[in-house]
Structures are given as structure tokens and as C-alpha cells.
Image (cartoon, rainbow, N blue to C red; front, side, top):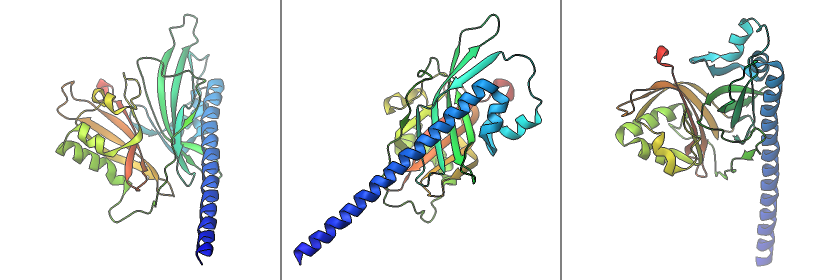
Length: 295
């Protein structure tokens, strides 16, 4: 009897291990496809220019910030094609990213290089992009939200190697009563007001978090957070969640309060994913302040 139970247990373990390996292989393949889509976006834009590249690779409802939220593809299609030679070309590459369990929502981020191609070129400028992608009904990947920042120095080489976020072994991703990704930004605002930015972020940050701010290098270590955090209020505009319920993004307007460095406002993009206990964790926090003339 005991030998039969042992045999059944071993068979169950073997089936589970096989299913896990298959799931991991599928995730790696899907992440490679997403990174390839980002590289194709960069290569096409480098060759054909900003307008054509962003029209081709943005979703119909894809949001960019110029500086306010706008449907990028719709705006560019209404604008006349540029005339004359380009003054600046830019290129970028994915260096980090993740994907939902369903393989229908993901994000990538990486360095951007702006090159002046005029007769008297200025020194190259560096940036850091952050894009969320959604798989369309035809199976193609399209950008659904995009926000970049300007770090003080180059973050990495354009030919940098892509690194995938660690997979999460979740028990479940089924939502519970009151569990709505659209409430996450409000909850974070409330937590900041009741405690402090450091305490509030400390309770929601994922192990592999990223914080992107203009003038700072990307922050991925908790000890470096103090330079980026302020008492902030977030106002959600919109977002999306993967069909598997494990990955979501939100975007909206932020405003700092009682900041010694001065009041600031602009727009943010957040990416959230469920941890091993299926609790929502903040994976990415990207902020872009409005120009003073727009505040």
C-alpha cells in the first residue's frame, strides 16, 4: 500500500515538474518575442524616423506624454510627415523586462542614445525609456504606454544584454473582494499621507523594483530611494490588467506635497505585479514632471 502511495506521489511530482519546465520555457520564449519587438521598434525608428516608427509600433489607444497624456498614434497620423533631413536620430535597446503569465501584457526598459546629425553636432544625449506592451488580437505586440526620463549619464550601452525579471511562483492570481488594481495608486497615496514616503513605498515595492526620475540614475536598491521619494499624491487616469490577473499598469497625474525641494507635478506610470502570495507589488515607478510653463 505504501509503495503505491509513494509511486503516485512520485508521478504527481514528475507531472508538476514537467508542467513547471514547460511554463518556464514558454515564459522565456514570450519574453524573447517581446524584447525582439522592442528591438524591431528601435531599428525601424532609427531608419525611418520618429513619426513612422511610433505610428507602426503604438497601439491605437497607446499613450505617450507630450507632455500631457495623448494617443500617440492618432496624433502622429494627423500630423504631416516631416520634410528635410533629420536633425537628431535616436536608438534604444531593452535591458530589462517582464511579462504576464498569460503572455498578453509586458514591459521593457533600457538606454536611449540621441545623436545630433547636423553639420555642427552637439554631444550625444542619453535617456532611459520605459514601455508597456500589449499583445493584439492578431498576435503582434504594440506599445500601450510609454514614458522616458533623462538620467545624468548613460545607463548602459545600446547593445546591452537583455535580462528578464525573475519568475514568480504564485499560489493563485484570482482576485478577492475589494481587490482592484485601479485602487492601488490611491492606496499608495493614502499610505504616504498616513506614514511617510519611505514607509509607504517600503510596504509595496517588489523585490525587483525600478524607480525612474529625471536627473537620477535608475534606482533598483532600497538604500538609494531617499533621493527619489517625496510626499506625493497620485490621481489615476487609466490602466490595464493582464487576462491572467498577475500584471497591471496604471498611469495618471502626480503632485508632491510639502516637498523641501519645491512643489512638483507631472505624470506617472506604475507597473504592478502579484508576488508569491498574490499580493500586488509595485514593480516600476516612473515620473516625468511637467515643464514650468505647463504647471
